[in-house]
Length: 208
Image (cartoon, rainbow, N blue to C red; front, side, top):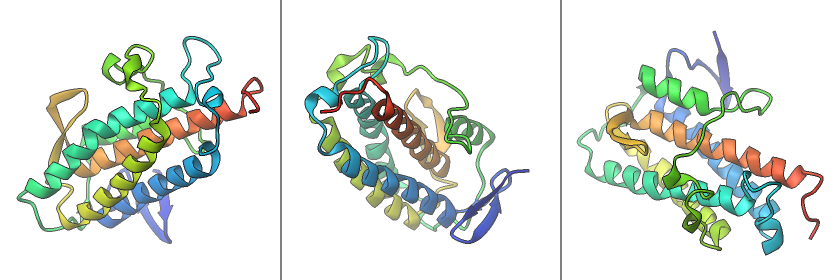
């Protein structure tokens, strides 16, 4: 049994969490990501932002473009659901669906900030296969989108994130409980921030 601690509260994520705990956790991840990008990436040169170890690996700009492509799907989806859902009574206890829990748990980093399972991005979200995803101002777009995500997280407190469901980016047929989708996006962003940190720490990364 895995026990998680958040703001002095202890809960077993294999059973349940409150809606507030879920939203607060994703908010903390998102704010940390914003702080990191603004502190560590804001003054990088174009050469540094576009540096790649090999043709197969991603640059920092490509990682940010990948995350921005996710935001371009999920943020309007969340916004529309918050506005249109009939489930207006906020969630107290949140219980993940089996598929939702399996998906965000596979995306979540391990306790040592390690990637437990690797995934290959589909072409629509892969800047190596779809280079037009990279806009050139990907860092600024990321900052804007993550601030928007924080607003959406706060607005999601006004609905039932267990009963409200949203489609996932790989299939409009598959729908997740909104709380599961929020965790998925939060953990996905966190996963790729760790990827950027590894790029910055590489011995061959340009100094200027």
